[in-house]
Image: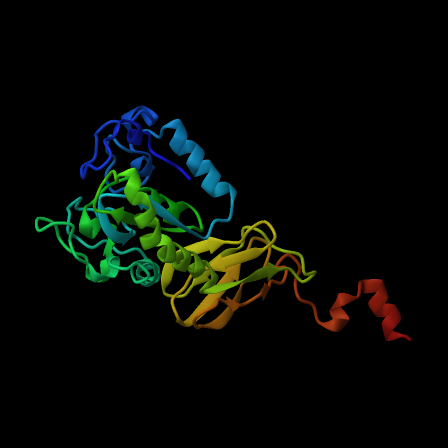
Amino acid sequence: MMSSGHFKTSHAGTFICVKHSSIINFTMIAKNYPHGYLIMNLNRDQQPESLAIMKWIKSYPFVLSANLHEGSLVACYPFDNNPQQEHGLNSPCPDDIVFKKLARSYSFAHPTMHLGKPCNSAKRGFPDGISNGAEWYSVSGGMQDWNYLNSNCFEITVEMSCQKYPLTAELPRYWLDHKNSLLTFMEQVHTGVKGFILDDKKDGISNATISVKGINHDLISAADGDYWRLLAPGKYDITVQADGYGPETKAVDVTEPWAAQVNFTLKSANLPQLAPDEELGKDEKLAYTYI
């Protein structure tokens, strides 16, 4: 769990953010990543904590994560910014359908989030309790965008409470409100497609590229050749390729509730495929002819 230091100087029960943090030189840890259509003060330079998180994320084959905030009641998904840097403009990522499914899995397991009611009359509501990040407000350098573009991990941002800093006495109620949502969301890691990418000796192939036709976002296999690819239900053509091997494509039917198990076996591309008599050397072929 990562916690931003501004909670140390906050006031419990308030609805607004205290603009101070004892961590990362007054930089918000969730908005300090090297991605965005516009480089801003928040993400121009990465602080040590952000660099450590980036290294950690790329060191493990994470599949799914949630960034937990307060200040509203909504589940947001990438992208967090748009080229215009304007609030209210939808900025979908290639896996927009998957992310909407993930966000709804959280909001509909919550007692009220899925109703989409605003926190007060001055704020907008969110249909189904979900929103594209940039459509709510555009921010450059968000953690969920960096995760999506630089790792295999699909991350959403959950705003858990209209109160920015809830009172300690209210925390048990928030836990009860969000417990089923958190569990339901974590279950989504078992959806889509999973399996192993192997060579003809049944050894795992790491760093193989997994591509889904029609979705411009590739993933890579883990150290043992295992992979996990979140997808919404539907029919897909999935292609796997790796250096030194020929590609393989399979048609996959993804259904609920569990992930389809699909393994790939790649053939080495280093040696030409020879006809049976061509597999013999010159001397062996002569001997074979006169036997």
